[in-house]
Image (tube, rainbow, N blue to C red; front, side):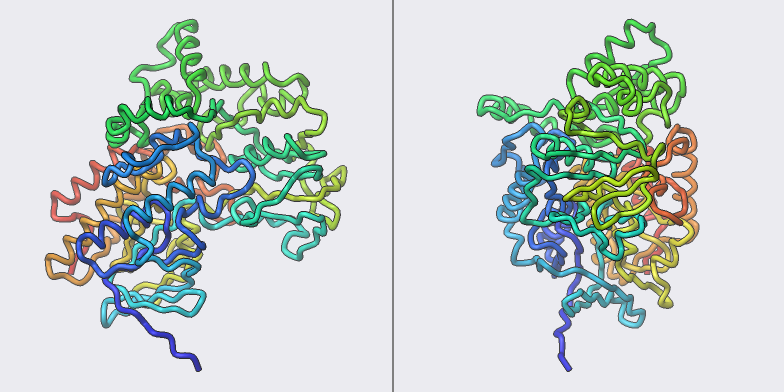
Length: 540
């Protein structure tokens, strides 16, 4: 038998992305005995795992960083939209600047966490056999840590024998794959599919893009930053980072306080042109305030996007598949992506669009991908098929609370929690960037700081008050679930099938996984709870 030492901690944090790093440093500064366990070999969270060709941030780098401890003063991004390698450099800079490595265990994937009701402690075990007992458990698993593998025949049994293999973008080989001269199949046209296809088109002999739903991607306007441009960005960066706290999605810009439906066509088009030319997510999150709630206004945004895309694609049949005349779903209710050359690559002879509505994928064969009418022989199959988003990172761990109930079992018919951080029956479990929080509707580092600070304050309130447990009430869980449902039902989001609603995972209950009221509204709800002595929580 092997005896494994069980450490005693105040707090165990899971995950070394933005949220986990913030929790670790803040709690350590406050004197807690805290450690962080990370499944990857280095910090970065999703930016450790996302190392596929073309993986890149879809927020401008300048505002995709901590405001925390003015770390920005000694950091400059080299690109307007940093790639995965530069994001790793950033996380290494942060970890070194805060001297965090001494409190982080890498290559330590958590597999189970059981609440000891007698001693009010979480007993947590990792895949390598390590165990720890912690008073508080703070999972920071993010919204994209549990890759989704489609159930096409041939995937599970490893049928494909192509020379470069079959790989999910979220589990890409750390040594990379040279796609030069290869025949490449890209299954999926979300953010990772768009990015891989762009890179493959440059060097691969053939690229087959298997599209189910067209991606309403916007121009990224990516560029390398000169020294002068970096200097210019630093001039007001402190103010830009602070401004994120006051906006709907944690960016330094916000919706226009007027309605698209109220404007004459020429004026409306001029506004759209300005947003389009600026690039990034402004066409989605700095547009008119009625776009996501009014179908007529929504149609004007889609029509503008459609016409700009079609103007770039030479083949009218391909153009109509990439940008249909009538929208398949309301504009903006599925996660848009940012692109550099995505629509242009379909003008190349080596790039082919395969419409999965016309010819759905039947199986993965030893040679490649077989649809209902053809087999595509390839050397590399890329699964750009997304994640069991938001809840998946938590339910992938066997978390068991009071009475041995698992979190996965409790949320089998849909999740309910309070303020997106805790749920009844799981004392001292406080999850960051999880279901019911702004999460994917909020700039990552901003959310890590804003929501993360509230979690730190809750731990302080319990600890300094001499208490031992905090959890939500059933009533608070239900109230928050109903509030989220009311907000999203007043929008166009339910009219589109998306991972926001859990639609990409067979058998998953359909519900909005994120708080759609905006960051400022979310923080207001937190403040109301705090002012009422943490209303909705049971503290004992």
